[in-house]
Image (tube, rainbow, N blue to C red):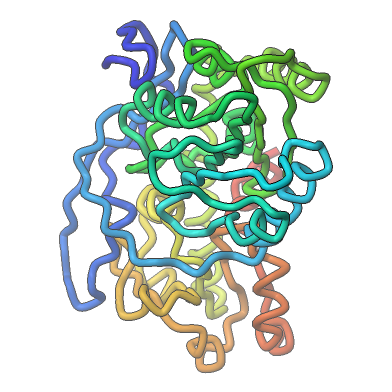
Length: 370
């Protein structure tokens, strides 16, 4: 293994999910499989501290999803905070590197008088919102972004914090196509190589812990950045043994999901899933779940209807399935969606059903054991 950023070869394997199907390739429901499988492993660089995907031989083919309301609300909140900090220059220019999963801040920034520039042009604000993690060559990707920041400008980077992944036991954030998992500590080192320094940061509850970092060619880290760096140190974010706890989190959550689905089936309680997300793929695979335990996963994205979850025979259904099945329980694979789905599908609870977060099943299992 050679680090995707600093090219060092010293590091540690900290999470191994074994052989997994490509989690962004949803086969047709009539396709019996088997699906191709590939290693899925996280490696921690001893030199720069970047946690990263090892090999990825998959070819991304993800059907477009529906942008969650929580993500839309967080974007509006973030832009308001940036504007309040004085980092949006009047009549400024912005270059956006977005996520291939969709979503853009350009309309929100345009409403505040900041206009986009053409590809390759310099900008006063260069924004990366969950974009750079999809770059296999992390050094080249960061070099491209910093080079486009105009003199006196700012680089804004939003990312799912590695500290939040560790604290929340979010082992299934590891997936093919996501090459990097940033701590503030590692990203600070990476930015320094390109002559940038983090100046301020904001945190959000999205995905259990999202960070928006503002960096520039001058200035010093403020209290918000120093607090996040201290949090990384306290969490032991650079210690391979500490990150290795994600493996036991994986085992507990997979076992918890299977036990829950088996108990629901034994009790004759109809159960469906909600959210055909990429992060659900490894969980279902590790739990050994199939359509006998989970007859379908409902999703709002029409592009996924008529398909199935990779690595299993569980079909993806349209929301109309809820009225037919009258489920006693809905396993939610994206916890951030809970307020949204409760409002969108009141018929679940009106019929006596309940929403159960897949993330909570490991903790329930541990509580039962203790």
